[in-house]
Amino acid sequence: MRIDEIVELARAAHRLHWAMTGIESEGDRRASLVTAAWQQDVVSRFGPNLVPEFPIGEGFGERIDLVDTQELIAYELKVSPNNTHFEFYRDIFKVIVARDNALRGLNHFVFITPDIGARKLQRGLARAVIEHAAFGQTAFLPDNSR
Image 1: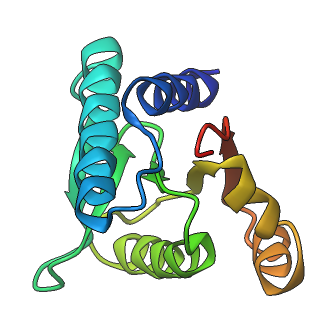
Image 2: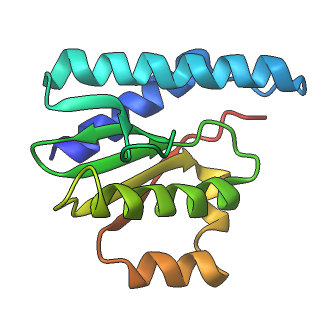
Image 3: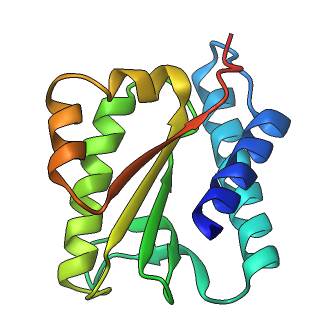
């Protein structure tokens, strides 16, 4: 399944480029590097139907990390294990707005995050949201953040 391959490419980019440094600007730089490398690898492997930085609609100024315009799947990559839940909820709203505006028919959302962050999403409100949203999936990255 292509989703599994795309998640595996995210894992590979994460292993290659990510490390917790304790320095916010360095973490931001590395997160951008991981995301860009992943996006490039996915587009190189699967072609132009995979669109990085897909705008959610006119005038919102927000983008989805990667969208499969053929299969109608949105992918968001949360590189750092910090504040995963904030990014998760924000990304859900981005996907809903995109589905209602720029990408009608969007039917699947894959949120990729380090396993420590993903474990936090397996309880409480986040778990209820995942179970409620038939189009949701959370993928785990290896936890090499230590």
